Length: 89
Image (cartoon, rainbow, N blue to C red; front, side, top):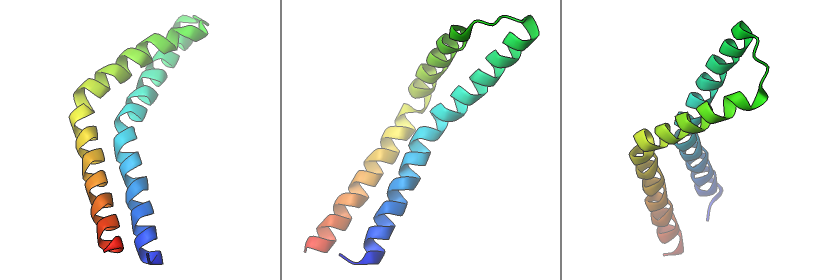
C-alpha cells in the first residue's frame, strides 16, 4: 500500500465526515444563536433552555438530510472496499 493511497483514503474519510456532519452542526449553531439572542433580549438566564430546541432541530435535520448522509457514507464505504480490493489484489 503506497503512501499516496493512504493519504487519499484519509483525505476521503475526512471529507466524508465533514459532509455527513455539516448539516447537523450548522443547524445546531444557528438554533443556538437564535436561542442566545432570545435569552439576551428577554433576560432569561436558563441554561437548559437551549437544549430542547437544538435536539428537535437536529432530529428534523436528520430526517431531512438522512438520505444524503446515508448516500455519502455508502459511497465512501464502496470506494474504501474498492481501494482495499485493488491493493490486496
